[in-house]
Length: 385
Image (cartoon, rainbow, N blue to C red):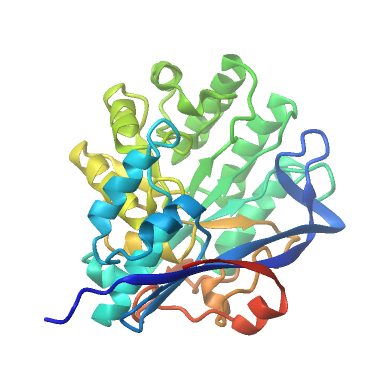
């Protein structure tokens, strides 16, 4: 056997991008909403991790200086000890390792083995059913009424074949409108589409949460997610809510770490467990949480899309839908076009006729970046070596 590979250089390339017809919600400034003619400035970064084996990772994301310093000179195949070391390094903070570097290590492993990450994970699926996940409601003529949400859900079902739809409702709107939207969507799509609700902590009182939850019961929603203002971390309040409504609760987006999420399950606070590579320790962390949920007989649902989640879902039995979002009927392009092939971009139209997305089959993450776009919009780079 040859010498073990070593990480020799790490680079983060930063780029700018604007999204048309999108702005920050005026009253709070925390949430993105539709507004015709607006341009929302933003951007992103690409993390590259180079090795002396002639293979380098290229993944969306970044890295902090302390993590980069730790990784230089390490064997990129020693993912588990790296994960455990960085978990300890982040104790008292997130209690989980950063996620992007872990995805990069899996990308390197797949490229060295000449197989997609999903194959390393034991994956068997090559396509994944999706739910269309909306932007928040607005007052600007986009998703402004319950009927708007109903019409968009029906459009996603009939035009693109989506089997499921998730609403992010309004921020600070009358609770009666939220209830009406919950019911209007079911009326619009009929009984053969799964529907979810994520208020994103928008509701101010337990009574508001309960009123909407009972509407979810009436409309037979698939899950009800993080409704409480700040209560997305409270085990007690979710366990209490389960005493009053029948709709399953999805919980875990805002708590971190295996131990904390295990406690939430044990407390009866969760029916579907949330996991995400970005904040739960990358692909390694997601797969640990999938096994945790499996041990309790629960399903794990991944937060947001992305190539890493496609590979994870291909190998997870106890999961239901890929989150394709955020989407809006009047915002055609919601992502920076960093991939050469549009089917990897998680736009509303990125699904096949049955509302599914593909799992990449080339080595590693398995998707080519559009470096012409990235370099044309490059704003700088950070190098660690």
